[in-house]
View 1: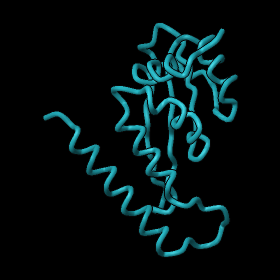
View 2: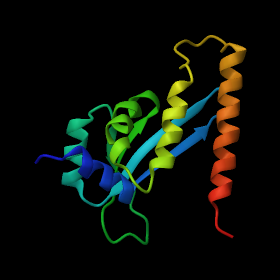
View 3: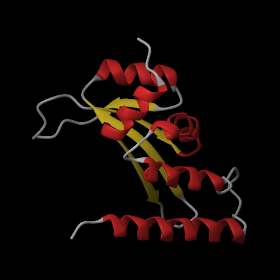
Length: 139
């Protein structure tokens, strides 16, 4: 099965999501780009194209009638996928722009204390992201 980049962008527009999780300090931020859906075959095909992702079946809730699968990329691994689909995404372009902003911040490649400029860049990023999310809430 061939999945065009445009098709992947449309799929992400409909089924995908972006999240940033802050650990016990602002220097520990995890970026998640994921697609949740019941079509296992389709997600496996996407996983073949982007094998750096994690693919698994989600635990079934008491409300679920179908099996739900999750395909998720974390942090820097999300970059190639986001860059590929970004030109074709419509409804979630702004969400993905936050991933690109996050990827501009230097990564913590060692266990050493981060330099103050990177700590401040991460703190500023999270504050701006939270403000943006709050501005999108209805009501």
